[in-house]
Length: 369
Ligand code: CO
Ligand code: ZN
View (cartoon, rainbow, N blue to C red):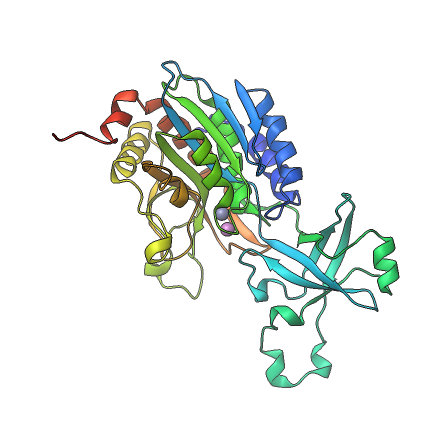
């Protein structure tokens, strides 16, 4: 299939986003990139109190509101202690699996914007018991070595308790359309939102593209953004699990790389997740089929997205999710297929242009008597 958008353009945007340092609550450098992209194409642009970026494109028959949401934050670490010999202790920001930290390089960002490299060291195999060699350390056992020899030296570098760190990993191409890096969750959703927002041409409804903060620590930015916007319909753009690799049985893959964006049916566990609005699921399927966009259906056992809180805004919002299949999420080696990204952009654009006032009203409160 011919892709309308230059692959290199999408890759370079994704690389700028993914390589930025922006754990939950400290999304500033990602926000600057988003504002730069949105400035050219939005009719209105604002940053709210929590730091969400809200871009508006006026519809041809405005009044109704379609909200797109993709989160800017990534999982990361807080510096929680600096010891006398200059080692940093850390605490997680969001869901950081301990085993993703073993022997990693990290980038520390100070409150005045300086960036330092550090490594997460461990005792070498020569000095530990054989059983210890097979175990993943607990969070409290990890430390970061930034090359300093004393607390004074660390402080003179400007590093303080409360500063932040993320994986040190640049987005790179594996082969063909497969790329790997950190924070692909959810900088790829952000890239899909920015690019689709840019190319949306004749949507009836006003389109609100919201780059949210603090998703990884409880969907916080999306909650206040939805409250302020009061959308009539909403789509989150985020990664989903693709466990199509050795050691996972086929029925647990969830999605596969390169088979198209996933249309979410449900995610999360019991009370915390989303059951996508069935009419949105139907409309996304219809849109994909009519536009010749490959897609897969997604029923995810764990994890969720901004759509879960947007759906519960005020009197309720019909909500769905377009997901980008991603392997090894919440690690420094996340892997996606750029074909899925390009197709997710097309699907988002097509959905926005297909959404009519009539259809949206048919999803809303009906008076029976
Ligand atoms: Co995540
Ligand atoms: Zn995410």
